[in-house]
Image 1 (cartoon, each protein chain N blue to C red):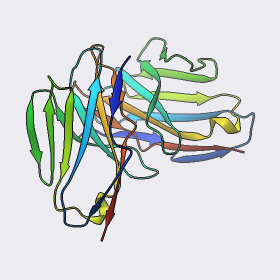
Image 2: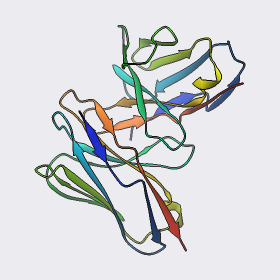
Image 3: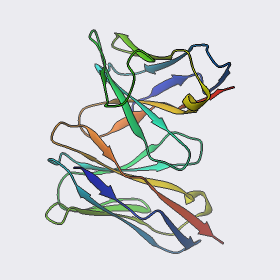
Length: 114
Length: 109
């Protein structure tokens, strides 16, 4: 199946700093990628839909100025958590679709803000 | 609103069979997915159903009834490594994935 690579796998940062997470589709072109957040023992929560060459579409309640998404190429989308705070600590996962039959997920990024 | 229901937790015995149910109410339907997620890891794709009936893939099978808004994931010959959360998700009329909260499956020896 298709491969989606996400980096880094985990990151610890100080409160107030920014963190960038990369999501790459390795063997296919992804015009659309999705960013999810998952808190412990909860389901995936869609944060935003990243569209290549255009602005991301954010879900209700997600601050677009805090979670910056850039999808500059067909194989790379980035999520930047700006001015991170402890409540932003979570598991962030990206996914990309290939056709309509399934979504492929990156490995996820465990963010801890101290 | 859109809703996907699945049991929070299930327990089964190694070597046995377990069925995880999922019911959904969504605005439109463009396929139902089952994913497996081990703790601390991203979900991995298990199955996809868009037509009614049973899809079998090795030890795992998935069933769909669109008229009932119902699906189940059947796991046979359970192994300890099958202990994980199983997520049911539906693509709605906008092709957006709507996720269930997941079923935590505990396998006992």
